[in-house]
Length: 250
Image (cartoon, rainbow, N blue to C red; front, side, top):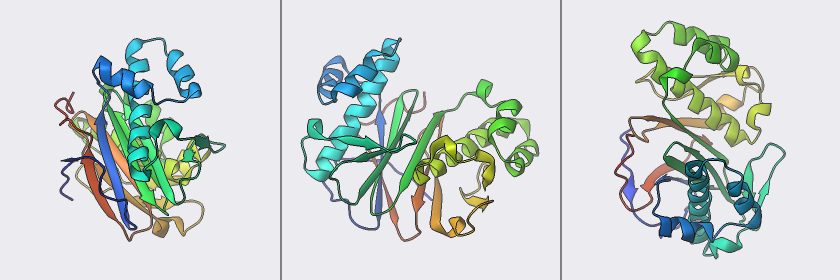
């Protein structure tokens, strides 16, 4: 699938059968950060204040502020008035939003957002770091089938394969709304670079394979990303928050 992130504002309605994916930079000017911070609820501001490093604090403010701005535009609501709820595993939802579902993820300097109507979505983005992609981490969090696939690959492709696996697993469990309470070795995803993203197998409900669609997202050379979408009858729309991102490969 050819992927082009179109620079535009979300003035197109979120139609049934569409999944809107947004890529946004977390590196904002001081004025922009101040404006985004003003949108946050007291609990979000308190969480931002607990970050030790300013960069992490600024990135959190940008990620949450942009989420509010996007949802406000889709729903025609003031973004500062939005009230979020969280399930037992931390997945956010929006009070009074009807059938609008959403999910977000951020890593390093980028954030990804997914929006849909009447279907669950989960998104994950990770900054690719070779030092994190070790065999011990894979053995701890991946299924036996995934570990075996990883071990058969040439050394030069293992880091990318590791993060393919990681982001696809995260997107799937986030879409289910269960977080890490869902055993990560209870399902298998594809990971070989160049192959399509897919949910390959589950050790639970066999209907899960037909229930979900899994896609790899091209978020930039230094990132791996994926989205899980409930159902198969949908179209992905890829957009990026203006201005044009100039540092997505960092």
